[in-house]
Length: 355
Image (cartoon, rainbow, N blue to C red):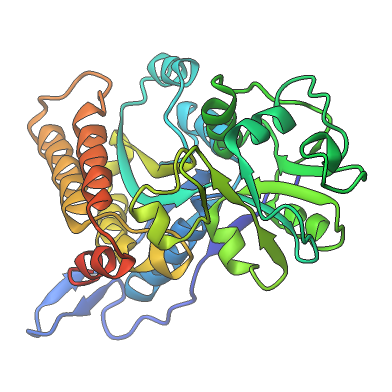
């Protein structure tokens, strides 16, 4: 398993006053130092990576590390208090909540973007232009009898299918199996289960009989190398795109992407500043890396929820593990609101204007 750890640190030569710098008015302001540790979802990784890179342009003395050990791997570290922020492409599970409770970790859940799980094939695959959700289930269900393309549709080639997908530590695996099979973790096991999505790209690019799935961003980044499969949920095949994810036409494989923030960590100035920067810039940066921004009202709700947590911390009124219902409901409202947007232009203009 390749654990890709991005360590973003810029060497900075202090001028004049060491850890202080002058603002536009000529007054001295304290320059942020310290560190922010992030790990988790390989799907959310491109967003957090982009945010971290931009943040370091503004606060070059803060060390930001961004890892991609998978949603499950991130929650293990988060629940143990090893990292400040956990990237996640699914909701937190009961056992992960219990780990947080055991270690006194209180958190807030924030939605940062929308995504569509994308089924991909080799560029020279001329037959699998679309599949129904029932065909996906037949292909990926536990102990599946499907071995060849012709087992899915008789007119397809009588050739073995070579499958690629995320391993069990990925939130993408959990979400895909839940919505397609009806049970999280219910999947055939005789496939190339990988930690690094780039291996999916490489495997499918070289094999005309390969098929796999991952987040939309990875397809957008490699669309010159891969073919995409339209998904038919009973209303005709829909290709995943910024437009179809934003409108929720790409059902049932559209989803929200999250970050979970340790409340204690949020008391540190560098973490608080980073989260505010993240939410302010997520509309623009999530789009740049191939994901779908929420409506601006969604980001405003996330900012309000985070600010409310900071107020509770400062007044000492919060002592329980945070129930993220307020944030989740706001995120769902933003997603539903996005359903009324008939083009990505409308959605993005709403997000970009405030970024």
